[in-house]
Length: 95
Image 1 (cartoon, rainbow, N blue to C red):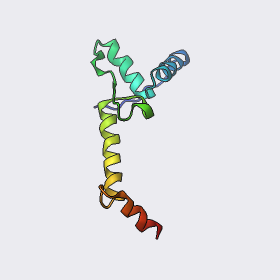
Image 2 (image 1 turned 120 degrees about the vertical axis):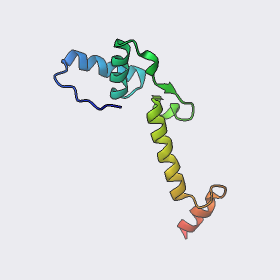
Image 3 (image 1 turned 90 degrees about the horizontal axis):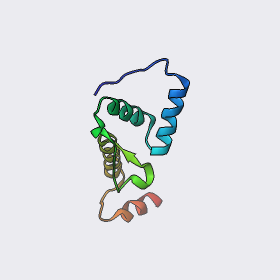
Image 4 (image 1 turned 30 degrees about the horizontal axis):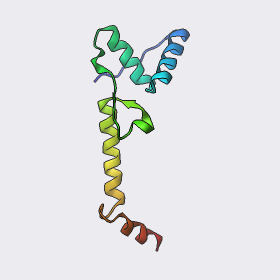
């Protein structure tokens, strides 16, 4: 994937993008990518809803989903000694 910087965006365009992002519950980046994709007829890049996170963050792209899942997995591995007995770790910390 390519990273780009866009300069001199007219105020009304920036406001429209911000409103669209708020209404859709997506990040500004996801909104801009979707708008650009749609303008080239590539609307299959729409964000997907994931039931396990949607109540917290709304919609996200596959890349965002993979990144957050990796962070949660790494946190889980760091903080839980035995995933079947999470109370063991809590008891050890409180002593």
